[in-house]
Length: 328
Image (cartoon, rainbow, N blue to C red; front, side):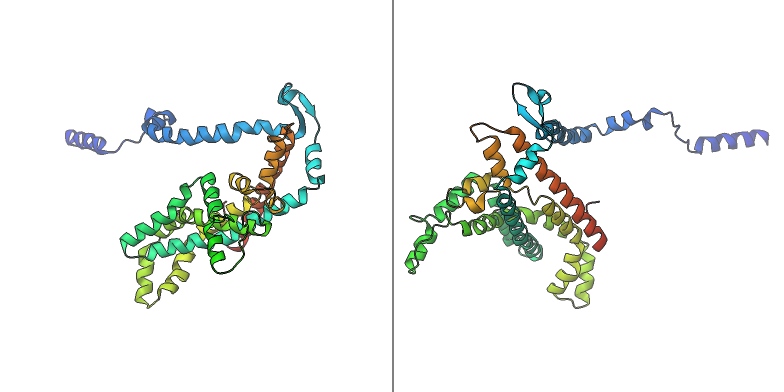
């Protein structure tokens, strides 16, 4: 009996799973990194990019508080505190530049907000695959046009002498209009050309969000007799609401960081009163001027970023309180 009990105990010991020791090398961080080395290599590329282009340049923010002299360097230049900020806010152009930037940015955000959602819903409910792929490709292609090509195309279409639009107006008895030189038309041309160019690209995010919706929701709604519009309102828009809120928060946070290239290319002496924004003003005083003032341009850029961070945190807090959804 003793021999039988010993053999049984040995068999149980063999069958019993062994608990991994905390000192085993398989549980160490280095071994786990080595197992997923290719994933970490892929992660290394964006990390290095963000570090080089977003964190290393933060050293130059010190120039906003100095009278920068290239021969002395950043640390050797004279410290002047908040003088550059006071200079910007006391300049006669300050209010006009801020108003132009906020007006164009808000107009662009509000006008362009529903179009990607509408396009994504239309593509999602389209059942004919050739039409679905064609619409998505056609609306996505304008995003790849450069700012130079887009503004050149608009200038040709809206030209007073040779533009297609003015030829049509002349044919119906209307006097040709200088659209590109009209200050009141600048906002509309800038915003709606941006909507035409970016709607297809922005819709990709909403298409991905709609693709992640469980189809059983729609099946149950159709069994209950819900129409397409009811399914869109009660299911699709409700379930993609976190994505909508996220993009809205990011849009409000970048309200002062309006693009530079397109506005600068559209500017001329006739529409300068409505087209001069912070980004073009910074370029004119810090790089284009005969005596570049890098400290002044850095101070204005720092002001832009501080306003953006403040608005992002504010809108995120309001969104969390109202809907319980936000960035964090």
